[in-house]
Amino acid sequence: MNTILIYDSSPDTAAATVAALEERCVLTCTLDTAEFQEEINERQYDLVFLDIDSAEGQSMGLLEKVHGKNPFLPIIITSKSERVELIVKAINAGASDFLVHPLSKERINLSVDRAIEIRDQRNEIAYHRRKQDIVYDFNDVIAESPQMKEILKSLERFAKTDSTILITGDTGTGKSFLSGTVHFNSPRRKKPFVKINCANIPVDLLESELFGHEKGSFTGADKLRIGRFEQASGGTIFLDEIGEMSMGLQTKLLRVLEEKSFERVGGNKTIHADVRIIAATNRDLLRQVEKGLFREDLYYRINVLPVRLPSLKERRQCLEPLARTLLQKSCQSLRRHIQGFTDEAMAQIVAYEWPGNIRQMANTIERAVIIEDAELIHAENLALPVARGGIVFPSSPGATVVTGSAAGVTNSLANQERDLILKALEECLWVQKNAAGKLGISPRALNYKINKLGITHPHWRRNATPDYQEQH
Image 1: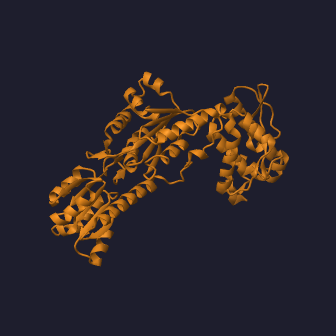
Image 2: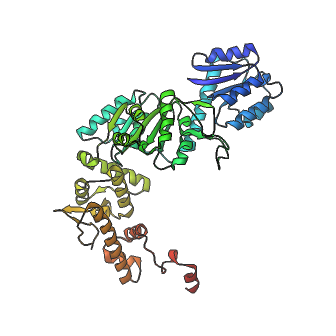
Image 3: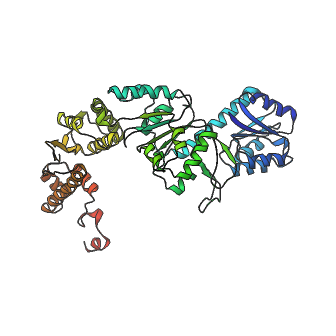
């Protein structure tokens, strides 16, 4: 339920607001300016009703003060006056809406719903700077293997609950991807869905990222920041790589799970956030608990509904349809028109182990789409090693055989590919078009590999130094 602070010294108008909202919100009413300011300073509210007829000449000052302290807090102004200049002044000062007495129940509820929705959208947009990679329907998830079909059935059941989900599995198996599917099939689907990778943010900044900070709480905190938990209120937060959290932050997260409350960094105001948590990790958390690196009580709090996602080598029936889906997605993103894969290319996709799972396959296919000139993806543009009797042959034309461990093979292949390209460029006097013909690949493919391998030469204008440019 949303918490709302109502400031109105008129019993009649205040009663109308209370009657409209008392069944769906937690209300706090005040008649006194000092008491109103104290409530704003001490407690966190989802929305404020401010009657400017009651503000004893301080109406706009109060509005500006509250908005300046928390620009994300919706403030609905009420008044008996309908003067246009007053309405414009209030909206410019930060009001979300301006309601004129007498107020109907329907008008009050409509204004509250709209203000809360706009707040949620602003918060979500502030954090989501790229398109979410999500399938919204469980039926659209590629699941041909019996194991994956059972997992999707479980996730579909779990989506209907509010319990915490812990998704485990190797890197790139789709943990982040499926967390969105769970959210958008849950009762919280119309509320924010916030994703955060705990491993990508420095430990000393992660607390501020999750819970926000007050202005001046540390060097560089020049304004109030709303944290991810506050932004996700009413919705779902996905904590990827939760095993990377520090012990101190784990303690604070445990409190959020148990009490649904926290304080911003540098603040003392308790903030309540009704958030559903989906956590994910590629680590063995039980082993982490045994080593004293993860709190045992937190582990049991997040492991209410456990799900383990299989690696691609455990779900080989999914490889071909998944490859075709990823190809279609890459073609749409890159605006390329490629119809599919050659038989040899698809055979390599199905035979390969995919140690990096879906993420590796997506990147491999995206690269192939970039460098492929034909209507079908050819095997050499996938650049996958092909296993033959324990020996790994690179698919690039002209490359030689490499043996050894998987990690060693990958490094050796990259080094050999670089040596071959350098040799061809030297023999062709660093003319890329001629070198591409010598290697048997397209100029676009060669240019991609040159950029990837970091090959440069002063004869190329884009790499020329100022001294060289002056001399030539």
